[in-house]
Amino acid sequence: MAIEPDTKDWTWVLQRPCTECGTDVTPYAPSAIPAMMDGALRRWMAVLRRPDAAQRPDGSTWSPLEYAAHVSDVCRVFTDRLALLLREQDPTFPDWDQDAAAVDGRYAERSSDEVAGELAQRAKKVSAAFAGVPLDQWDRAGLRSNGSPFTVRTLGQYFAHDVLHHLHDVDG
Image (cartoon, rainbow, N blue to C red; front, side):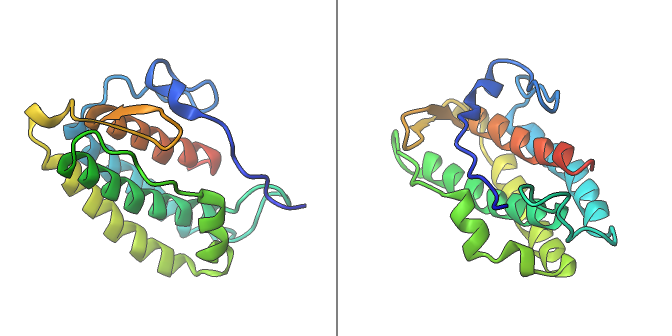
């Protein structure tokens, strides 16, 4: 069985705790992203050291390795989106098809060591990007291609949920 594309709109997690993973991102400020990412990265590294990290729990669910590769790409995408928010006035984020990225990036064929190294590098970069945003820039606004509004603050919150939710997905 193939992995079904995720077509859910997860922006509701910006108003209330996630009903699936329990994460409440409403108190997160951009300056909190580095500490969140540091803790999450340690947990992701432990997940990638599991002997069964590359095994899918069933035919329709990514393996922990694939989820980690996805989170690595999420770090890259959010670094780019944050830069766009800070560089342009009211930008619209380019589309990103996470399911196509999984196929194109050959997530299932990668090694845990490769994904761990890439994830660590990208986590450091996204953390530094959020840490470097001055307080007076946290309300800079932009739109996702579907029209969902984001600010620097809510982009960080949405990012935090994605990272932490997928840790929940893999029991990390």
